[in-house]
Length: 426
Image 1 (cartoon, helix red, strand yellow):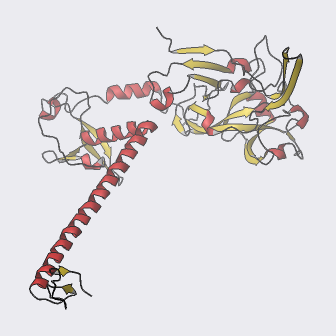
Image 2: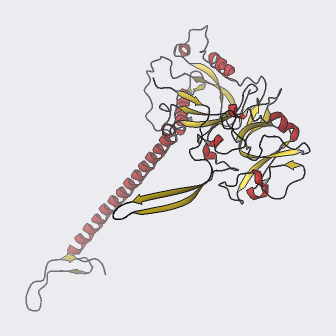
Image 3: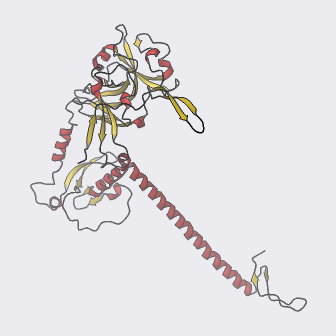
Protein backbone atom coordinates (compact mmCIF):
# COMPACT_ATOMS: atom_id res chain seq x y z
CA UNK A 1 0.00 0.00 0.00
CA UNK A 2 1.39 3.36 -1.01
CA UNK A 3 1.98 5.71 1.93
CA UNK A 4 -0.07 8.92 2.00
CA UNK A 5 2.49 11.11 3.79
CA UNK A 6 6.02 10.80 5.13
CA UNK A 7 7.58 13.28 7.56
CA UNK A 8 11.28 14.05 7.18
CA UNK A 9 13.33 15.88 9.81
CA UNK A 10 15.27 17.90 7.25
CA UNK A 11 16.53 17.86 3.67
CA UNK A 12 19.88 19.46 3.00
CA UNK A 13 20.38 21.14 -0.37
CA UNK A 14 22.60 19.18 -2.77
CA UNK A 15 24.76 22.26 -3.34
CA UNK A 16 24.62 24.87 -0.53
CA UNK A 17 24.95 28.57 -1.27
CA UNK A 18 28.53 29.59 -1.99
CA UNK A 19 31.26 29.85 -4.64
CA UNK A 20 32.63 26.67 -6.16
CA UNK A 21 35.44 25.69 -8.53
CA UNK A 22 35.15 22.77 -10.93
CA UNK A 23 38.48 21.26 -11.96
CA UNK A 24 38.58 18.77 -14.81
CA UNK A 25 41.65 16.85 -16.04
CA UNK A 26 42.10 14.31 -18.81
CA UNK A 27 45.15 12.30 -19.79
CA UNK A 28 45.64 10.63 -23.16
CA UNK A 29 48.39 8.29 -24.34
CA UNK A 30 47.76 8.09 -28.07
CA UNK A 31 48.97 9.29 -30.46
CA UNK A 32 51.21 10.80 -27.80
CA UNK A 33 51.04 11.33 -24.07
CA UNK A 34 49.17 14.53 -23.23
CA UNK A 35 47.30 15.98 -20.28
CA UNK A 36 44.51 18.54 -20.47
CA UNK A 37 43.21 20.61 -17.56
CA UNK A 38 40.41 23.15 -17.21
CA UNK A 39 38.74 24.83 -14.28
CA UNK A 40 35.62 26.96 -13.95
CA UNK A 41 34.20 28.94 -11.05
CA UNK A 42 30.46 29.28 -10.40
CA UNK A 43 28.26 30.66 -7.66
CA UNK A 44 25.10 29.29 -6.05
CA UNK A 45 23.10 32.15 -4.53
CA UNK A 46 19.70 31.91 -2.88
CA UNK A 47 17.32 34.62 -1.72
CA UNK A 48 18.15 35.91 1.75
CA UNK A 49 15.93 38.99 2.12
CA UNK A 50 12.89 38.36 -0.08
CA UNK A 51 10.57 35.46 -0.88
CA UNK A 52 8.29 35.22 -3.89
CA UNK A 53 4.63 34.53 -3.14
CA UNK A 54 4.75 31.70 -5.70
CA UNK A 55 7.13 29.84 -3.38
CA UNK A 56 4.38 29.56 -0.72
CA UNK A 57 2.11 26.56 -1.28
CA UNK A 58 -0.32 27.21 1.59
CA UNK A 59 -0.73 28.73 5.04
CA UNK A 60 -2.79 27.75 8.06
CA UNK A 61 -4.85 29.64 8.98
CA UNK A 62 -5.32 31.16 5.54
CA UNK A 63 -4.84 34.87 4.90
CA UNK A 64 -7.46 37.10 6.56
CA UNK A 65 -9.30 34.11 8.04
CA UNK A 66 -11.33 34.74 11.19
CA UNK A 67 -12.31 32.21 13.82
CA UNK A 68 -11.30 30.69 17.16
CA UNK A 69 -7.56 30.01 16.79
CA UNK A 70 -6.41 30.40 20.38
CA UNK A 71 -5.25 26.78 20.53
CA UNK A 72 -3.56 26.70 17.13
CA UNK A 73 0.07 27.04 16.12
CA UNK A 74 0.22 28.59 12.63
CA UNK A 75 2.33 26.99 9.93
CA UNK A 76 3.44 27.67 6.39
CA UNK A 77 4.08 25.17 3.58
CA UNK A 78 6.75 25.99 0.99
CA UNK A 79 7.23 24.60 -2.51
CA UNK A 80 11.02 24.38 -2.00
CA UNK A 81 11.82 21.26 0.02
CA UNK A 82 15.23 22.55 1.18
CA UNK A 83 14.40 26.22 1.82
CA UNK A 84 14.71 26.25 5.67
CA UNK A 85 18.19 24.68 5.50
CA UNK A 86 19.76 26.53 2.54
CA UNK A 87 21.58 29.04 4.76
CA UNK A 88 23.48 28.73 8.05
CA UNK A 89 23.00 30.83 11.15
CA UNK A 90 24.94 28.67 13.61
CA UNK A 91 26.59 25.23 13.76
CA UNK A 92 24.54 22.03 13.63
CA UNK A 93 22.92 20.68 16.78
CA UNK A 94 23.60 16.96 17.29
CA UNK A 95 24.18 16.57 13.57
CA UNK A 96 20.92 18.33 12.67
CA UNK A 97 21.11 21.62 10.70
CA UNK A 98 19.54 24.65 12.37
CA UNK A 99 16.98 26.44 10.13
CA UNK A 100 17.68 30.05 9.17
CA UNK A 101 13.99 31.06 9.34
CA UNK A 102 11.36 31.22 12.07
CA UNK A 103 7.60 31.86 12.14
CA UNK A 104 6.62 34.60 14.60
CA UNK A 105 3.10 35.67 15.59
CA UNK A 106 2.74 39.37 16.44
CA UNK A 107 -0.61 40.64 17.72
CA UNK A 108 -2.05 44.05 17.05
CA UNK A 109 -1.15 46.50 19.80
CA UNK A 110 2.21 44.92 20.68
CA UNK A 111 4.09 47.97 19.31
CA UNK A 112 5.67 46.19 16.36
CA UNK A 113 6.52 48.50 13.45
CA UNK A 114 6.70 47.40 9.81
CA UNK A 115 8.05 49.11 6.72
CA UNK A 116 9.66 48.51 3.34
CA UNK A 117 13.22 49.49 2.55
CA UNK A 118 15.95 48.72 -0.02
CA UNK A 119 18.21 45.80 0.84
CA UNK A 120 21.24 48.11 0.69
CA UNK A 121 19.76 50.30 3.43
CA UNK A 122 19.94 47.37 5.85
CA UNK A 123 23.72 47.54 5.59
CA UNK A 124 23.91 51.34 5.72
CA UNK A 125 23.53 53.80 8.56
CA UNK A 126 22.35 52.26 11.82
CA UNK A 127 19.23 53.64 13.46
CA UNK A 128 19.66 54.50 17.11
CA UNK A 129 18.20 51.94 19.50
CA UNK A 130 17.50 49.38 16.76
CA UNK A 131 19.66 46.27 16.54
CA UNK A 132 20.40 44.56 13.25
CA UNK A 133 23.42 42.29 12.55
CA UNK A 134 26.50 43.85 11.03
CA UNK A 135 27.26 43.30 7.36
CA UNK A 136 30.16 40.98 8.19
CA UNK A 137 27.77 38.54 9.91
CA UNK A 138 25.44 38.34 6.90
CA UNK A 139 25.96 36.07 3.88
CA UNK A 140 28.53 37.31 1.43
CA UNK A 141 26.54 35.91 -1.50
CA UNK A 142 22.80 36.33 -2.07
CA UNK A 143 20.49 36.67 -5.05
CA UNK A 144 19.03 40.12 -4.27
CA UNK A 145 20.40 43.42 -5.51
CA UNK A 146 20.92 46.25 -3.05
CA UNK A 147 18.15 48.19 -4.80
CA UNK A 148 15.59 45.41 -4.25
CA UNK A 149 12.87 46.18 -1.69
CA UNK A 150 12.52 44.04 1.40
CA UNK A 151 10.05 44.18 4.30
CA UNK A 152 11.27 44.58 7.88
CA UNK A 153 9.52 44.37 11.25
CA UNK A 154 10.93 46.11 14.34
CA UNK A 155 10.03 44.27 17.55
CA UNK A 156 10.39 45.70 21.06
CA UNK A 157 13.21 43.84 22.80
CA UNK A 158 10.85 42.52 25.48
CA UNK A 159 8.51 41.09 22.87
CA UNK A 160 11.46 39.63 20.96
CA UNK A 161 12.67 37.80 24.05
CA UNK A 162 9.16 36.43 24.68
CA UNK A 163 8.26 35.13 21.22
CA UNK A 164 11.58 34.25 19.58
CA UNK A 165 12.28 30.50 19.77
CA UNK A 166 15.64 29.32 21.04
CA UNK A 167 18.33 27.82 18.83
CA UNK A 168 17.60 24.42 20.39
CA UNK A 169 13.90 24.72 19.45
CA UNK A 170 14.40 25.77 15.82
CA UNK A 171 15.13 22.25 14.43
CA UNK A 172 11.81 21.05 15.86
CA UNK A 173 9.87 23.88 14.20
CA UNK A 174 10.83 22.95 10.63
CA UNK A 175 10.47 19.71 8.74
CA UNK A 176 10.02 18.36 5.24
CA UNK A 177 7.27 16.07 4.07
CA UNK A 178 6.48 13.92 1.09
CA UNK A 179 2.77 13.78 0.26
CA UNK A 180 0.93 11.44 -2.09
CA UNK A 181 -0.72 13.83 -4.57
CA UNK A 182 -2.34 11.15 -6.70
CA UNK A 183 -5.88 12.16 -5.73
CA UNK A 184 -5.39 15.91 -6.02
CA UNK A 185 -6.29 18.22 -8.88
CA UNK A 186 -4.25 18.32 -12.07
CA UNK A 187 -2.30 21.48 -11.23
CA UNK A 188 -1.12 19.94 -7.92
CA UNK A 189 -0.58 16.28 -8.76
CA UNK A 190 2.05 17.26 -11.33
CA UNK A 191 4.40 18.18 -8.46
CA UNK A 192 6.81 15.68 -6.94
CA UNK A 193 5.07 15.80 -3.56
CA UNK A 194 7.99 17.21 -1.56
CA UNK A 195 7.38 20.29 0.62
CA UNK A 196 9.02 22.05 3.55
CA UNK A 197 7.01 23.25 6.55
CA UNK A 198 7.76 26.01 9.07
CA UNK A 199 5.69 26.03 12.28
CA UNK A 200 5.17 28.82 14.79
CA UNK A 201 5.96 28.45 18.49
CA UNK A 202 3.23 30.78 19.78
CA UNK A 203 -0.52 30.23 19.93
CA UNK A 204 -2.48 32.84 18.02
CA UNK A 205 -3.67 35.56 20.46
CA UNK A 206 -7.46 35.73 20.82
CA UNK A 207 -9.73 38.49 22.06
CA UNK A 208 -12.74 38.44 24.39
CA UNK A 209 -15.84 39.82 22.72
CA UNK A 210 -14.08 40.93 19.55
CA UNK A 211 -11.45 39.37 17.28
CA UNK A 212 -7.77 40.29 17.61
CA UNK A 213 -5.77 40.85 14.44
CA UNK A 214 -2.41 39.09 14.35
CA UNK A 215 0.31 39.09 11.73
CA UNK A 216 2.30 35.93 11.13
CA UNK A 217 5.84 36.69 9.90
CA UNK A 218 8.31 34.32 8.30
CA UNK A 219 11.49 36.05 9.45
CA UNK A 220 15.13 35.60 8.46
CA UNK A 221 17.63 34.81 11.22
CA UNK A 222 20.74 35.38 9.12
CA UNK A 223 23.50 37.04 11.12
CA UNK A 224 21.66 36.53 14.42
CA UNK A 225 24.00 33.74 15.60
CA UNK A 226 22.66 32.30 18.85
CA UNK A 227 19.73 34.79 18.69
CA UNK A 228 20.97 36.89 21.61
CA UNK A 229 20.85 40.66 21.18
CA UNK A 230 22.61 43.52 23.01
CA UNK A 231 20.90 44.36 26.31
CA UNK A 232 20.96 48.11 25.63
CA UNK A 233 18.94 47.99 22.39
CA UNK A 234 15.29 49.07 22.40
CA UNK A 235 14.11 47.19 19.32
CA UNK A 236 15.27 44.27 17.18
CA UNK A 237 14.93 44.50 13.40
CA UNK A 238 14.07 41.34 11.50
CA UNK A 239 13.55 40.84 7.77
CA UNK A 240 10.04 39.53 7.10
CA UNK A 241 10.24 37.24 4.07
CA UNK A 242 6.49 36.56 4.00
CA UNK A 243 3.52 37.60 6.14
CA UNK A 244 -0.23 37.15 6.42
CA UNK A 245 -3.03 38.25 8.77
CA UNK A 246 -5.47 36.24 10.89
CA UNK A 247 -8.31 37.26 13.24
CA UNK A 248 -9.02 35.22 16.37
CA UNK A 249 -11.77 35.52 18.96
CA UNK A 250 -12.47 33.37 22.00
CA UNK A 251 -15.73 31.43 21.96
CA UNK A 252 -16.60 32.79 18.54
CA UNK A 253 -18.17 29.49 17.56
CA UNK A 254 -16.08 29.40 14.39
CA UNK A 255 -14.07 26.27 15.14
CA UNK A 256 -14.10 22.76 13.72
CA UNK A 257 -16.36 21.31 16.42
CA UNK A 258 -18.88 24.14 16.00
CA UNK A 259 -18.93 23.71 12.22
CA UNK A 260 -19.65 19.98 12.51
CA UNK A 261 -22.36 20.69 15.09
CA UNK A 262 -23.82 23.28 12.73
CA UNK A 263 -23.97 20.71 9.95
CA UNK A 264 -25.89 18.37 12.25
CA UNK A 265 -28.37 21.08 13.19
CA UNK A 266 -28.69 22.23 9.59
CA UNK A 267 -29.89 18.90 8.24
CA UNK A 268 -33.47 19.08 9.48
CA UNK A 269 -36.46 19.18 7.15
CA UNK A 270 -39.63 21.24 7.21
CA UNK A 271 -42.13 20.63 9.99
CA UNK A 272 -40.57 17.51 11.44
CA UNK A 273 -43.80 16.72 13.28
CA UNK A 274 -46.02 17.30 10.25
CA UNK A 275 -46.57 15.13 7.18
CA UNK A 276 -46.35 17.59 4.30
CA UNK A 277 -45.43 17.31 0.63
CA UNK A 278 -42.37 19.49 1.14
CA UNK A 279 -41.19 17.29 3.98
CA UNK A 280 -41.69 14.13 1.92
CA UNK A 281 -39.67 15.73 -0.87
CA UNK A 282 -36.78 16.46 1.52
CA UNK A 283 -37.07 20.25 1.53
CA UNK A 284 -35.95 22.48 4.39
CA UNK A 285 -36.26 26.22 4.99
CA UNK A 286 -32.99 28.17 5.01
CA UNK A 287 -32.13 31.80 5.64
CA UNK A 288 -31.55 33.57 2.35
CA UNK A 289 -29.67 36.87 2.01
CA UNK A 290 -30.53 38.50 -1.30
CA UNK A 291 -28.07 40.48 -3.41
CA UNK A 292 -29.72 43.74 -2.40
CA UNK A 293 -29.31 43.00 1.33
CA UNK A 294 -32.79 41.84 2.32
CA UNK A 295 -33.09 38.71 4.46
CA UNK A 296 -35.75 36.17 3.66
CA UNK A 297 -36.32 32.42 3.75
CA UNK A 298 -36.13 29.99 0.85
CA UNK A 299 -36.63 26.32 0.17
CA UNK A 300 -33.59 24.08 -0.26
CA UNK A 301 -33.15 20.37 -0.92
CA UNK A 302 -29.68 18.76 -0.56
CA UNK A 303 -28.31 16.90 -3.59
CA UNK A 304 -28.09 13.51 -1.81
CA UNK A 305 -31.75 13.31 -0.76
CA UNK A 306 -33.26 10.23 -2.50
CA UNK A 307 -36.21 11.91 -4.18
CA UNK A 308 -37.35 11.32 -7.77
CA UNK A 309 -38.06 14.62 -9.48
CA UNK A 310 -40.91 14.07 -11.93
CA UNK A 311 -40.84 17.61 -13.32
CA UNK A 312 -39.23 18.08 -16.72
CA UNK A 313 -36.01 20.09 -16.37
CA UNK A 314 -35.75 23.41 -18.15
CA UNK A 315 -33.62 23.29 -21.27
CA UNK A 316 -33.09 27.05 -21.51
CA UNK A 317 -29.43 27.99 -21.10
CA UNK A 318 -29.01 30.29 -18.09
CA UNK A 319 -25.58 31.68 -17.23
CA UNK A 320 -26.17 32.85 -13.62
CA UNK A 321 -27.24 31.31 -10.34
CA UNK A 322 -30.15 33.76 -10.13
CA UNK A 323 -31.41 32.35 -13.41
CA UNK A 324 -31.88 29.00 -11.65
CA UNK A 325 -34.13 30.35 -8.90
CA UNK A 326 -37.62 28.79 -8.91
CA UNK A 327 -40.54 30.70 -7.47
CA UNK A 328 -42.93 28.49 -5.52
CA UNK A 329 -46.29 30.16 -6.11
CA UNK A 330 -48.09 27.88 -3.67
CA UNK A 331 -45.89 28.90 -0.71
CA UNK A 332 -44.81 32.34 -1.96
CA UNK A 333 -41.04 31.74 -1.56
CA UNK A 334 -38.13 30.80 -3.77
CA UNK A 335 -36.64 27.34 -4.26
CA UNK A 336 -32.83 27.82 -4.35
CA UNK A 337 -31.91 24.15 -4.90
CA UNK A 338 -30.80 24.47 -8.52
CA UNK A 339 -29.29 27.91 -7.96
CA UNK A 340 -27.12 26.53 -5.13
CA UNK A 341 -26.10 23.54 -7.26
CA UNK A 342 -25.14 25.86 -10.14
CA UNK A 343 -23.06 28.05 -7.84
CA UNK A 344 -21.39 25.03 -6.23
CA UNK A 345 -20.41 23.70 -9.64
CA UNK A 346 -19.05 27.10 -10.62
CA UNK A 347 -16.92 27.33 -7.46
CA UNK A 348 -15.57 23.80 -7.93
CA UNK A 349 -14.62 24.63 -11.52
CA UNK A 350 -12.86 27.84 -10.50
CA UNK A 351 -11.00 25.94 -7.78
CA UNK A 352 -9.34 23.86 -10.52
CA UNK A 353 -7.41 26.41 -12.64
CA UNK A 354 -6.62 23.89 -15.37
CA UNK A 355 -10.29 22.97 -15.84
CA UNK A 356 -11.40 26.60 -15.59
CA UNK A 357 -8.93 27.50 -18.35
CA UNK A 358 -10.34 24.73 -20.56
CA UNK A 359 -13.88 26.00 -19.98
CA UNK A 360 -12.85 29.56 -20.84
CA UNK A 361 -11.12 28.32 -24.01
CA UNK A 362 -14.21 26.30 -24.95
CA UNK A 363 -16.44 29.36 -24.54
CA UNK A 364 -14.04 31.44 -26.61
CA UNK A 365 -14.07 28.83 -29.37
CA UNK A 366 -17.87 28.65 -29.36
CA UNK A 367 -18.21 32.42 -29.58
CA UNK A 368 -15.76 32.47 -32.49
CA UNK A 369 -17.77 29.79 -34.30
CA UNK A 370 -21.00 31.75 -33.73
CA UNK A 371 -19.36 34.89 -35.07
CA UNK A 372 -18.08 33.09 -38.16
CA UNK A 373 -21.49 31.50 -38.72
CA UNK A 374 -23.13 34.91 -38.45
CA UNK A 375 -20.68 36.38 -40.97
CA UNK A 376 -21.27 33.48 -43.38
CA UNK A 377 -25.05 33.88 -43.12
CA UNK A 378 -24.70 37.60 -43.80
CA UNK A 379 -22.48 36.98 -46.82
CA UNK A 380 -24.88 34.34 -48.18
CA UNK A 381 -27.75 36.82 -47.83
CA UNK A 382 -25.78 39.50 -49.69
CA UNK A 383 -24.89 36.99 -52.40
CA UNK A 384 -28.54 36.04 -52.89
CA UNK A 385 -29.49 39.72 -53.00
CA UNK A 386 -26.87 40.51 -55.64
CA UNK A 387 -27.98 37.58 -57.77
CA UNK A 388 -31.55 38.89 -57.73
CA UNK A 389 -30.39 42.38 -58.66
CA UNK A 390 -28.27 41.06 -61.53
CA UNK A 391 -31.09 38.92 -62.86
CA UNK A 392 -33.44 41.92 -62.82
CA UNK A 393 -30.90 44.09 -64.64
CA UNK A 394 -30.29 41.42 -67.28
CA UNK A 395 -34.04 41.05 -67.75
CA UNK A 396 -34.44 44.82 -68.07
CA UNK A 397 -31.57 44.98 -70.60
CA UNK A 398 -33.10 42.27 -72.76
CA UNK A 399 -36.35 44.21 -72.74
CA UNK A 400 -34.52 47.22 -74.26
CA UNK A 401 -33.53 49.04 -71.12
CA UNK A 402 -30.50 51.36 -70.95
CA UNK A 403 -27.03 50.40 -69.95
CA UNK A 404 -23.67 49.75 -71.41
CA UNK A 405 -24.24 46.42 -73.17
CA UNK A 406 -23.63 44.76 -76.48
CA UNK A 407 -26.33 43.46 -78.80
CA UNK A 408 -26.33 41.27 -81.86
CA UNK A 409 -25.31 43.64 -84.62
CA UNK A 410 -23.84 43.32 -88.06
CA UNK A 411 -20.31 44.60 -88.47
CA UNK A 412 -19.24 46.68 -91.41
CA UNK A 413 -17.95 43.58 -93.21
CA UNK A 414 -21.29 41.81 -92.64
CA UNK A 415 -20.13 39.41 -89.88
CA UNK A 416 -22.22 38.85 -86.79
CA UNK A 417 -21.19 40.18 -83.39
CA UNK A 418 -21.85 37.99 -80.35
CA UNK A 419 -25.12 37.96 -78.43
CA UNK A 420 -26.24 40.37 -75.72
CA UNK A 421 -23.85 40.47 -72.79
CA UNK A 422 -24.50 42.64 -69.69
CA UNK A 423 -21.44 44.75 -68.82
CA UNK A 424 -22.87 46.84 -66.03
CA UNK A 425 -23.78 50.49 -65.95
CA UNK A 426 -21.29 53.12 -67.03
